Image (cartoon, rainbow, N blue to C red; front, top):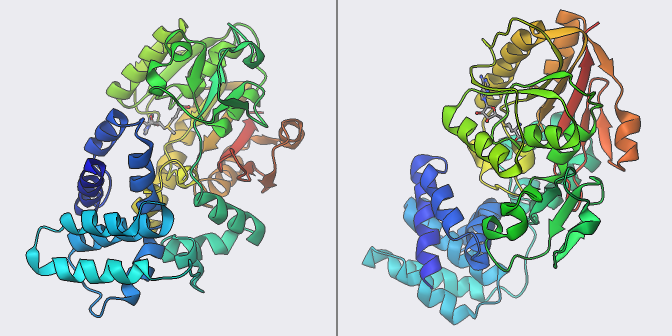
Length: 416
Ligand SMILES: C[S@@+](CC[C@H](N)C(=O)[O-])C[C@H]1O[C@@H](n2cnc3c(N)ncnc32)[C@H](O)[C@@H]1O
């Protein structure tokens, strides 16, 4: 079980650094196709609070070194959530313990866990759903119960990989791929049930027939009516999911910006792979971006706390803090302030985030409208056409999560 050691090292890194390092993503994509590894690392993160609760029942002294905590989480996860024989899990997990003095303890706790007859449910919701306590209390303040519970339930279920088909080349019905389903909301989306090879080696991806993108993200450009030769700005574009989609959907003059030069390279590569042409690429802070003409439509797919992506990235829930949400909210406000000046009269601003916070969504759009005088476009009919369930706050829509849709907020504002 070499995967176990890799998983342990990655999970340890996270606890040391407080968040995932770049190494995680590099190592992870290297072994992407290893389903067991993915299930293990993400599973441990997805169930972290719950696993700690189970482990703590058998610990007299709860204050144990982080390395031992990680090893116990791995062992508890494998025992409770996989079919691997218990004796193998206990042996292999105990082998991860470097300090001799802790081996006995880990062995004893894991053996106790193997004797648990069925999965118990703690009364406290944050333990049951494995969410940091502060975050659950925060969400309760502004989310209706049905939204909250639906999100918490779905967050425990890993999400399958989605992609969109390149509308310029083909429809999803013309794709010759096995093991796919169609997305329920996006008319250009597919869901992979399984992968036989690495997603990046798939012929359809290399040829530019498909692009990996979440279904929620696919829906954002589909909510906008683009007209030929309009001037469009994608202010925060990397890695280019929506920028490339916009050009697959329409013949517009697209300006593609991101603050991060290495991430703009990713966008350029996607444009090359898809054989698309942007009017211009810029590497600028959207708070200072400037052009000597104005745009018909601008997309601000803002840097955000990404809480809606927890099914793909369970660590995001633990990486965030009230302080960071506040910071991101004011960064977004500054971006919106500048971007508003780049928009034509009668132009449209599309603001979206993949997060579920009041400060980054409702509060920012409310502020923009009150401060700058924009008019909210009612997108509810459009969303209903795509059979999307949403929460409407009077400013924008927050998608309800479902089997394949992850929370996403979108607002369209007209500059009168
Ligand atoms: C949510 S991602 C955009 C995803 C992209 N629109 C897509 O669909 O693939 C946010 C992006 O904003 C960029 N960003 C962060 N701060 C920025 C700023 N001040 N100005 C411009 N871009 C910024 C980040 O580098 C990141 O690539």
